[in-house]
Image 1 (tube, rainbow, N blue to C red):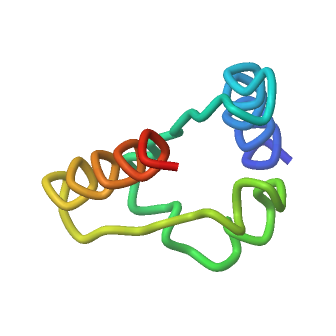
Image 2 (tube, rainbow, N blue to C red):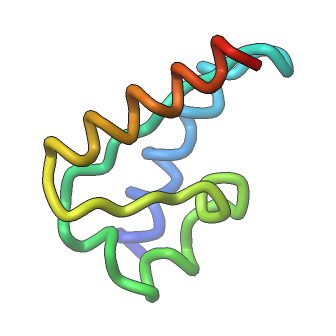
Amino acid sequence: MLAEQRLITIASPAGRAIRHKNDWSMLVLVDTRYQSAKIHSKLPSWIGKSLVMTQSFGQAIKTASQFFASKKEG
């Protein structure tokens, strides 16, 4: 139960960052536990379907940069 409450706590502020269809935000979860399929299944679907896992923090930063660059272009 506690783990599920934490996941809700994570999702709540991420949802607040998105106010309309042209808003974009990123939630960075820096914890190996988020690689677990058990945890994925408990995330809200709108987070789970966009989840990207990287092997290093440097890769995460690169992926984040690419994400926001693609939104500027679009």
